[in-house]
Amino acid sequence: MWTIIHKMGSPPWFFRFSGGLVKWLLPLTVCLLLVGAVWGLLIAPPDFRQGNSYRIIYIHVPSAVVALAGYYVMAFAGAVSLVWRIKMADVTMRAVAPVGAALTAIALVTGAIWGKPTWGTWWVWDARITSMLILLFLYLGVVALFEAYENKSAAARACAVLTLVGTVNIPIIYKSVDWWYSLHQPASIKFTGESAIDPSMLYPLLLMIGAFYCLFAVTVLLNMRAELAWNHRDASWLKQLVQGT
Image (cartoon, one colour):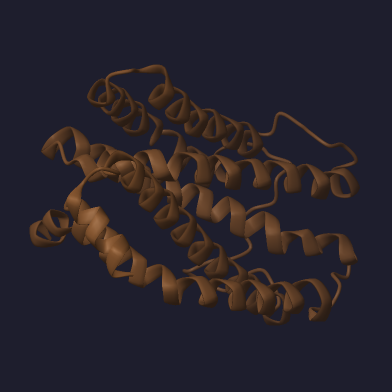
């Protein structure tokens, strides 16, 4: 584990590694998104109660799932930054924050669009929705903190503390529909027990979740590479890599 963290902490090694990773991950992401979108939005059968309006689930659920997972990635990077002072962890936090914020915003907007025909309103202060809104503020807070400090080390420490404190919100999001009365429906996908969704609708949903994970990975890697290229623009290793390509 320490060997992996040590390698990931080297900007030259990570820049080379991520470049190769993006080359095969990007076409995979595009293929998964295309297949999943066509399968879910056009081929999957309509819901017997909601008709075709439920199809927004193929955007709403993947964006929400990956937004939550992305916060754990950012929080882990924050912990590594605080404990080992590894600069690449700071780069990771900064790269993940805007991507996580965008996914959370997509989840909130698509949830509102889905909620209008289902609940008869665009927004309610439901426990799940409110905690997702807090998640958006946490992501935006990390983005703002990095921009607010001139001292990058101080900014990284502040962001790391914020991300770790904010992890309290993640289990609240997961369990909110179980802990409190909520208009939001319980989870349809269950890992222990039978899922409350027909396989004809479940399989394209799982494919889209996988596609969004790949999209998250590609976007974060590209953000990290851009951050490294800017921070090390005068470094000899970067010039050699650029000339080599």
